[in-house]
Structure formats: C-alpha cells, structure tokens
Image (cartoon, rainbow, N blue to C red; front, side, top):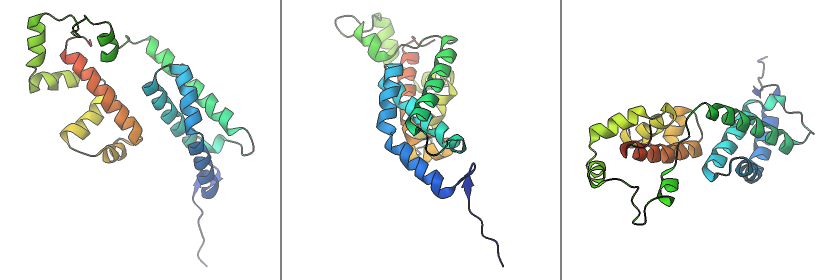
Length: 187
C-alpha cells in the first residue's frame, strides 16, 4: 500500500500554514500602519511590512496557534526595524531627490552651475553604466532585469526570490539614486 505524504511547513500541516498566511495577509494594512509609525516614510514602511510578512511566513513553525498573531507580527517588525536602524547607522544617509528639491533654489534648480546643468543633460550611456555599477546590488539587480533584460516585475520577483512590491520599490529607489549619482550628489 503506497504511503501518503502531507507536505508541511516547519512543523505545521499545509492547511494550518495556509490559514496563517491568510490571517497575516488580512493584517497587512495594520502592519503597514505600524511600520509607518516606526519609519515615518511610506516607502520604507511598505518595505518593512513586506519583510515582516516574509520573515513571519518563514518562521511560521514558531507561531503558537491561539496566541496573539498581531503582537507576534509587530514584534518581528520591531526587531527588523531595530536591525535596519543599527545597520543604517554605519552607512551614510542618502538624501532623496524630493527632499533636495524642497531645499532647492526658487527656480527649482538644485544649485548647479550652467556647466553642471549641461553635463547632467548630456549624460551618456557610459556614464549611466558607471553610475549603475556604483549603486548597491539590491537596486542594480532589479533595474538591470527590468530595464535591460526587459523582464516584467513578476518575472524579476521570481528571479530574485523577493515580493513584486519589493521589486517595484527597489526599482523606484534605484532610479532615484541613479539620477542623484548622475547629478554628482550620491557618493
């Protein structure tokens, strides 16, 4: 008689893991809200919520059914946030172009001389390639797959094994960093 095999995630049967995933998905808006209270940045909050969900699903075997799922998720999120803050303290702060524009001159320029403005306008593909090479890999890989290889966001997410939302966020941030790099202000 053939043996039947029930796939499990951690120590939970598949149906329990699916139920947990559904419950976590239902809490997504609350996770984003809490993440925003920690980060004060909508993009960073969305990333933090995605990372929390991924971490929770990966550690689903640690969750005890019948306990407070929301509290467990918030604890994971808080720990992830604290790790990011600690890691970020060792790196220089990156200013967004939006923040730079708010402090720009009245005509909307970033204080560049006419020669600098002209150089920025004439940035060629080699300069873009070099600037792209200087970006952190977490941004260069999605940008390359979407812009050069012409993969969809879903295909890129599958290749990089990250959520589609994270791909979109990294491409958005990577493009902003790339623009800042080309303008000479990222380093």
